[in-house]
Each structure stands twice: as structure tokens, then as C-alpha cells.
Amino acid sequence: MALSSYRMHRIYLSATMNYGLGSDDPEELAYYNKIRKEMDDMKKDPVKKGISLSWDNPEEIGK
Image (cartoon, rainbow, N blue to C red; front, side, top):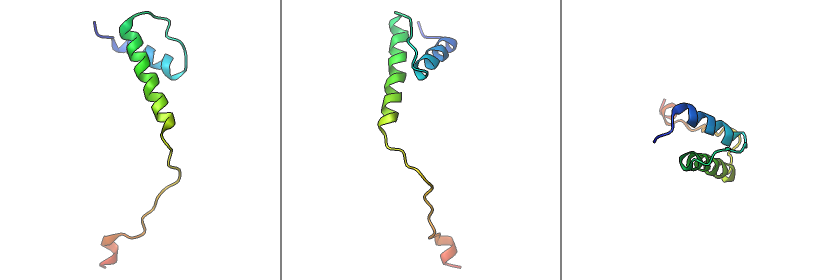
């Protein structure tokens, strides 16, 4: 049985707020673990700070 959107939202909130799930349903646990893994992967990726500007605009050079 597929998870309802309401249940998926509740699991998402639990995972993002670092709460426990409190359920033994394998489908819910799989979804919870998937979200937690995605969050951990995002934390490992470097964050690019600042704004990169390109001053060389080919359209402006030709004018």
C-alpha cells in the first residue's frame, strides 16, 4: 500500500526536524531513511558562497 501524502508529509517533518519516527511500518521506515540519507548527502556537499559575476558579456563586446 502506498503512503498517503499526509503520512509522507508527517514523515518528512520528522526526518527534517531530527525526530524519531515512532513506527515499525517498513514502508514508512524506508521513506524516513531515504530522506535522512538525502539530508546527510546535502550536508557533505560543499556550499558555494557568494555570487559569481561574469563581466565578459559577448553581446556587449560586439557593440
